[in-house]
Length: 127
Picture: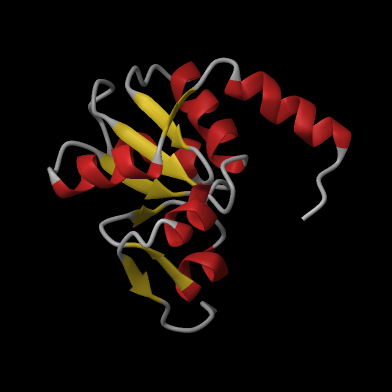
């Protein structure tokens, strides 16, 4: 997907403030139960398939809903999206909300799949 210059600038600024983790690091933390992994993609993307052990909270609602789902501002949270752009923007916002241990997974869902990491198959397109 081709992204606009303004969007890429916004993402680059967010990435300068956000910690990124590799697929392997995210996978280890999921398996050890040490981090909440949240998929911030759209509902239809989630419904098509997602990382095993992830929860869904789309970018459009995560800031509204995160405190109810993860009240502990020290909890480790790893966000991912399709390629690591939307998750960086969301991680930046969560940090502004006081979350101290949030990261974006580098490469997102595409990197997860390329690494052969475990997935939950999709159940069709969400309505």
